Image (tube, rainbow, N blue to C red; front, side, top):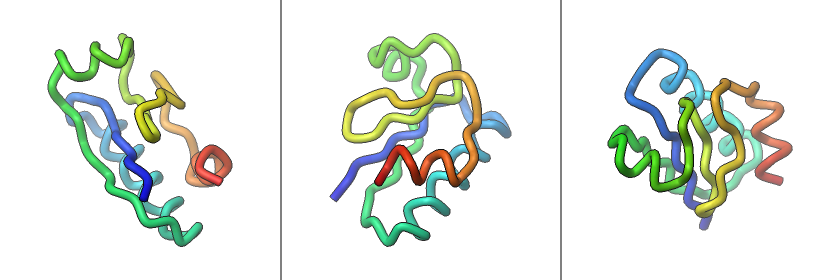
Length: 77
């Protein structure tokens, strides 16, 4: 099972990224744990300086923007 983390302080863009990520996982039928990380120390531990960011299995995939569900599906498959 994949671990997916959405990094961000809780802004609307972060919430949109979480929604797009959950939609992409659902459409692909992938079981994953989706975690929202809002702690700045945890976010910077990934080397991320701009949010929102998407981390899949510990690897930073997207930083500083909200990709479409289609783009996230490509990253996950």
